[in-house]
Length: 84
Image (cartoon, rainbow, N blue to C red; front, side):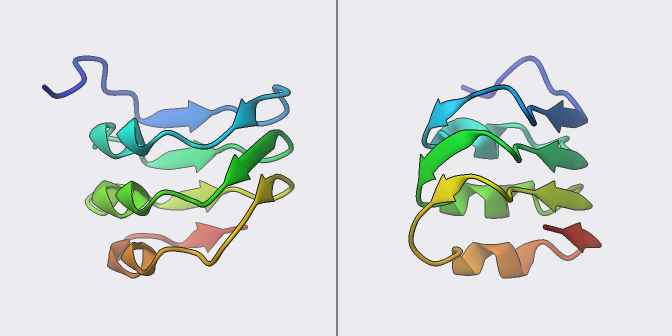
């Protein structure tokens, strides 16, 4: 079931968040700007972020505690113009 709330901006930076980014992030298909920097997020960046390919232009994940490699699915983000 798709998420009924479809924001275009997801700005969660500097909120003391912890834990992994949930795989359900891929359900937010209208996201154009996503910032989760300066938190305590850990674990791998979920491959489901690649499902945001139709709109995502800015992706800022820095200053967290992510582990592992970035998922190859990030390569499908063809509109992405800024990463950090």
